Image (cartoon, rainbow, N blue to C red; front, top):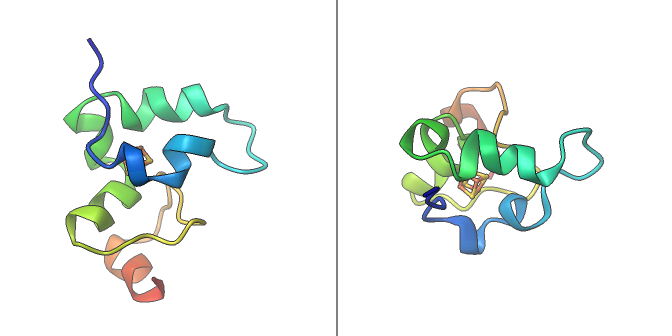
Length: 74
Ligand code: SF4
């Protein structure tokens, strides 16, 4: 059974998906949030939570910038 990311309860992207995106919320869940460790590790928001940094709402899981660069903006 799929297990949710441990940060799902406080993650706005888990709750709402990516605003104005062609990717429906269930797809984001399947790619990142409920996929297990492989999906979580691919998510920039997850990595930020792991660094004890609260990601801004507009940081998306598939952001292609290095997490250190994103973290400086948060
Ligand atoms: S995998 Fe990423 S987008 Fe999904 S709930 Fe966790 S931190 Fe949020």
